[in-house]
Each structure stands twice: as C-alpha cells, then as structure tokens.
Image 1 (cartoon, helix red, strand yellow):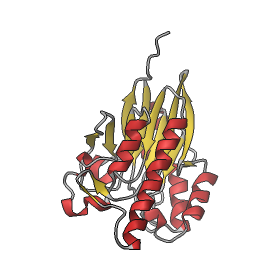
Image 2 (cartoon, rainbow, N blue to C red; image 1 turned 135 degrees about the vertical axis):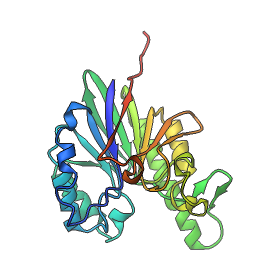
Image 3 (cartoon, rainbow, N blue to C red; image 1 turned 120 degrees about the horizontal axis):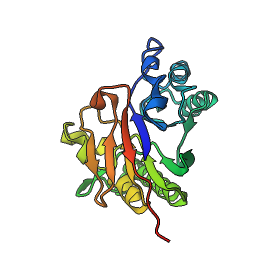
Image 4 (cartoon, rainbow, N blue to C red; image 1 turned 90 degrees about the horizontal axis):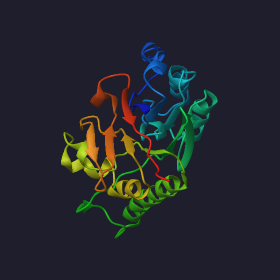
Length: 242
C-alpha cells in the first residue's frame, strides 16, 4: 500500500509563514509522499515562494509539486520553481519523478494543465489567433503529460495537475467557467498512461471525487474542498503475474 498525501490551492502569502507547518511535521506517520497541486502562492512572487519553501521544505517525506495559475501571475515561474527546488521540493512540468516505497516504485508525472473545456462543451483551434493559441497551449501541455506518463515504468503511476482533467470534480462551480478550470485532453492523457490516480486543484467550489472515462480515480485536493492541511489516498501497487 502506497499512501499519497495531497493538497492544492494553499495560496500562501508573506503573512502565512508557519500556518501549515505544525500539521505537516508529523506527515511521515501517515503518508509516503506529499503532492502539491499548484496555486501554492497568492500572486506568484519570489518572496511568497520562500514562504512555501519554508512550509513544505525538509519534511519527513518527499514533496512533489506543480505550479498553478496564481504561481504564474508575477511572470516569474522559473524563479518560483528555483526557490522550491532549492528547498528540496521536486517541481514538475512535463517531467516525472520516481519514489521508492517499501520495495515498490511510485511514479509521478506532473503538468500545470490548462483550460479548454470538456467533451461537447469545449473550445477548438479555430478562428482568431488568440483562440488558436489558447487551445494550442492546452494541447501541448496534455501531450507532454501523455509522454511523461508513458515514460514511467513503475508499480504505481500518478498524474499531478493543477487544472482538472474531468468535469466531475467541478460540480459546484458555475458551469460557465468550466472551460477555464480544465480540459478533457488532460483526462485522455491520463487514461492513455496506465494511471492509477489523478490529483488536481484549482476548483475551490468543486467536489473531491471524480473519475475519467477510462475509470481512473480523480481527486480535487484544493484546500477549500478538502478543508484540511492535506488528505491521504491509498493506492495498491499493481500485481504482475509471471
């Protein structure tokens, strides 16, 4: 059994130092890894990133993160990423990391994701250049997630995104903004990758539980949804018959 703790949308500002740390220091007793599903800062400043690094750095389990739209707001995602990585946090964007857990391997593939909408109610790369660029960005990110998942050869595969891969976990949000909360292309990549669990944030008024068309569990771990410092999901490593 691999125990995966996760949270997103903590939106830490410079006044939030120490807010989460007391709940995190004992994480090793109940989890093997912590996944951060983006929007770690309020406005994407380097000073806020240092607060995130202080909260989530040096924990008793590996910490893996993706950035969210808030973490891009100050146009310094590379600097924010560098601060987090200096604190020992693995930050993914079209990349993977593999973690050993009690003789098994956990592979995490991560991307920020982007919007676009869901089957039957989605944008297309047609018309104005701005619309084409919007959908092209989503497509490129989803393709990078597909490639990353396909590259993993691990007992368990987890997809970590900020934007949602399914509409299920958005219920509670106004339907008019679904196209800005996620894309079905992420869900297709997750289904193609042999994934056991998908974790995302972004939808503060959504709900926790969802599933891809291919039957992969999807969990919205935005902190306003889970209402705790983190939540833990258990995944059984696949049994390979020889």
